[in-house]
Image 1 (cartoon, rainbow, N blue to C red):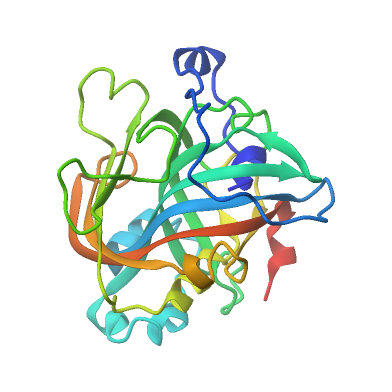
Image 2: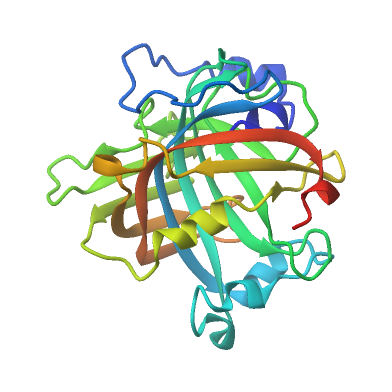
Length: 295
């Protein structure tokens, strides 16, 4: 996401030095960025990876999302029938490789990977109807451009990913199209520690959510716990390009996710969670006043 390029926490130079950019010199398996004609103030790229709904208690979401921002229960009541009544909130995970990132048609940054938990349907403007996404801490692969000195949108960690230069990889010895993507904060992988994000997904014929539900939640404006108040990102994922249509339609998946602190409040394992593997184009207009994104 290009909002990461413009609005991440400035990371200390010693941390960047300790985490050199991953050597991704081989051709990417991600398809090229199909978007053209955008001005230099607008970023474009592709997002290749897996997104999945992780049900959590509403009370847990309420503790994590800043208390000054209500949660728009009615906004997700129809999309997730019975969840409001059962006290369930639809947090989601994004395990993504961003590829072919451009500004004004020119290369803007190397490919990088990211892992995060995201809370949609947040009333950032307190107007009772405009849903935003709250970004919890995010983990990214080393990329000096991503860690540029720009107003911080959300708390950001640098670490390592497996696979290091792809959106996912086949599980060794696995069957039925099982893939994985894992991510470690800092040098935890080198020290033999458990991943901060550990995911495996397998293809299934059908999932209990329409892909339009993911179109809804991934296109809500994003805000975080950054140091610059009242700044949000209008990050738009386009699902009508050749990356996400025809032979490239999103693939329904089911899987298991394990997340460690500080990316969730405590170690948590979700089993039997549903989502999609997909590749899509995106457009980002970062650093906008949140009030300008009222819907």
